[in-house]
Image (cartoon, rainbow, N blue to C red; front, side, top):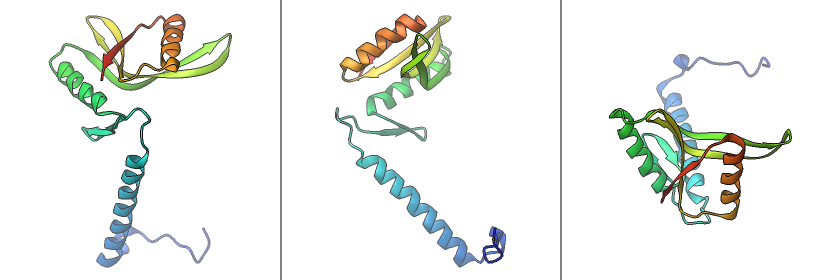
Length: 142
């Protein structure tokens, strides 16, 4: 750091300076929210927020809420979201598939994907994930 640009501890700043910093940070967060909203999904899915988590679709957010209730009730355990699986063939990375949710039900690991549209790319990835990892994807309709 140069001599002219010394770090000043936050506690040394006055209330006006702290308010300005807070306003700048708030504006940056709001800009990020607007940017996220502007990115339109080509299939019409709208982003939704639950428990402070932003989901790619309202259907995925609703499913998360149901799975959280099931976890609290002890029906499932180890609930995770956005779990990546590599699609590697003959040592070469081809693609990756990201499970919307993964959890354990009745001793079995379940990989779940909330689907509104089953695209050709998704269908291919699902077959590859099953062949490579032995995972059968549970599809939940949006």
